[in-house]
Length: 279
Ligand SMILES: C[S@@+](CC[C@H](N)C(=O)[O-])C[C@H]1O[C@@H](n2cnc3c(N)ncnc32)[C@H](O)[C@@H]1O
Image (cartoon, rainbow, N blue to C red; front, side):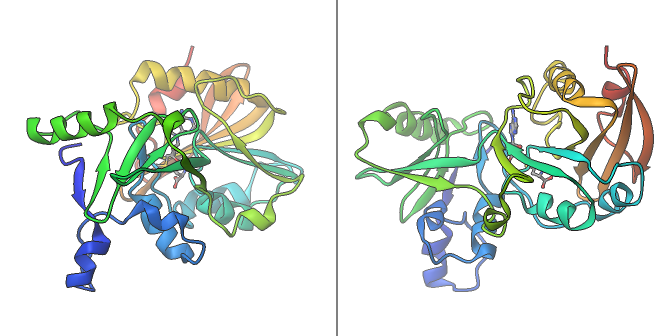
């Protein structure tokens, strides 16, 4: 990230109310009165461990139509990995029949830690990924930043320890429309694609905008694909979807341990060859 230090949009809007520049203040997620739209705007810009939480409702309509129109049993078990706040999962649930739907993500909640400098946002392991105060929003990422910005970011985050913070609040990172739907048939689980899937085998795994070469090296994507393959029943399906920005995806069927391409939308997935060639 070239500019990890951004101006807080709330500050800019005090001067120019309609301005879209600057970064939305993640502290807005602590406000119980925040609208779903405002919460989504914050999540769009949240980046944890190098991966954006960007998502929105009905993000891949053509792939969803294909999933609804064929192949899956009415009692399908569906596992949606890297689902972010579950906005896209809700859209799929509205169109595709299922018996159980797992909405999963590595980061389903965060921790907001208030200090005299501002608020640090940490993942479930206490690693800080963002900071915000009245003036700025700062990402804990120095990769492509200038030396000046890198220095500020490194100093800010290096001195932070969540265990020493007295004011820590849990922040759910899920779409509030999902929460009342959670029951035995719609489950929310924290799941990391680099670990084996720990629950029942699935008829369909959805991996949308997560098996991304900007985020992970091919060897890591192959590792994740092996875990997703092991999560599937024989003849189960894997949908790999990207929005770049047009929707592009492939649907694969598992046959004797290999993924066979069944369908394509747009240009198809960037990692199609990795999927079909998976050892
Ligand atoms: C760009 S969002 C995609 C959200 C949604 N699937 C969509 O297409 O709109 C990527 C999501 O992957 C999650 N993620 C990142 N690394 C992960 C991992 N190792 N295992 C599971 N989820 C991960 C992030 O937290 C983020 O919510």
